[in-house]
Image (cartoon, rainbow, N blue to C red; front, side, top):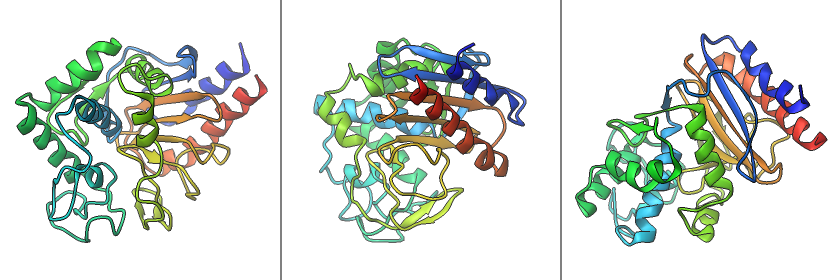
Amino acid sequence: MSALQDAAATAMEWPAPRVSVAVITAGGDVAASAGDQNHRYRLASVTKPLSAYALLVAIEEGALSLDQPAGPAGSTVEHLLAHTAGYDFSSREVRAEPGKRRLYSNTGFEVLGDLLESETGIGFDEYAREAVFDPLGMTQTTIAGSPAAGGWSTSGDLSRFAAELQQPRLLDRGTLQRATSVVFPERRGVLPGFGVQEHNDWGLGFEIRGSKSPHWTGSTNSARTFGHFGQAGTFLWVDPEAGAAVVALTDRPFGEWAARAWPPFSDGIVAALRAG
């Protein structure tokens, strides 16, 4: 068994009833995995990168634009994708001027979902399926109800998405680069589960690791690492400097166990990748 496979297999020791993980190289190959790759899990906020990708396809197709007004007065599609529109986490209460603070918000993504439906006449779940899931062969992935947190998928399907995030076929590479680079830099905000971050960096639907501490990725993950985690006990990260991505899905809600287990797991993956 390779060092990378050994590192992936340590996830099976997590205190969760069911765990599935995969390591995907920059070339799109699944280099290591553990657990059932076909079991469907609730994604919670790991839905957001999937939804963001569908929205980015819509932007490239001309159905939406980043500077299009959306949400609170003065806010745009870009503000909503970058969690800087000023919305409260789960209501339409406006707590800040657009662009001033990083206020992580499910509401912002639900507003984006409604906007896409009104602009295209296509339900958000159907649009995401036609624009992202079907072309990538993600046959077990759905978004039911909320573009913020209504996703279900498998490790196998998300491995296909992780490959797309490293070698895009559905988006122009420049679009993906913008989405996975810091938008509205140096904004202070709370990273759910990990407290206030002075530089709470995000791209367009993707969290950027940057200098955040504490964090759910490893201490050896590069600052360029991007991805998302979910309260369902799920995460996906892509580290361009390590040349790989990791998908991890569980059926135990995020909590102290995950904050303890995930960073050393990611460090073990990075170490194995570096060792070759």
